[in-house]
Image 1 (cartoon, protein in one colour):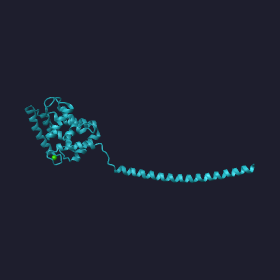
Image 2 (cartoon, rainbow, N blue to C red):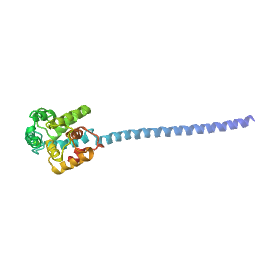
Image 3 (cartoon, rainbow, N blue to C red):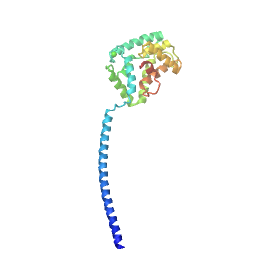
Image 4 (cartoon, rainbow, N blue to C red):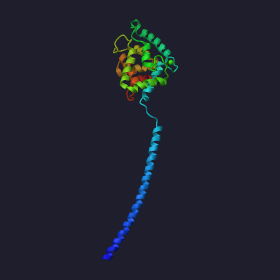
Length: 238
Ligand SMILES: [Ca+2]
């Protein structure tokens, strides 16, 4: 009986040794796989970093920048791709002509200071300092990113100041001819585009008012929501 148990014990001992050997072998393979896995993880991290560098970064200002380029074009009266004192002077002359056509002798002489307006809202590198498109976009982008709400308010003042020469209140509905003159003041003279804008305003707001035009321009310059209908961009941005 004892001999039989001894034999079984020896047998189990042999199996145990065998399993231990296999276990050791599996452990080695496992360590090997672990090493390979760590290696792949390192490569993956490396590729991810590399890919991240290659991928074009979406900038918060990408959408407004395209709109600021449209504004730049409308301000660049002599079409030399720079905003200079000459553009400011051309716009002052144009403004006086339009004011006469629009309101005749009722114009209040002190309602709009063209030079002050350009120095406040346009020449962001300093009064009268020439701007390239990139300078112009960078200056607006800086204010925009610093405080979006403050930038929106600034643009409401910017376009509100231009509209201040209109003698009646800003909520008075205006006719198409006035609208055409009004948009000229904002630098838009392409009659087909202005007609398109008028139709858009009418379809969206009913008979447009000066306040609608001011609000639409403030939205155009200060709003980065691509999903929102932007009438100025629809009419002039393409
Ligand atoms: Ca120019």
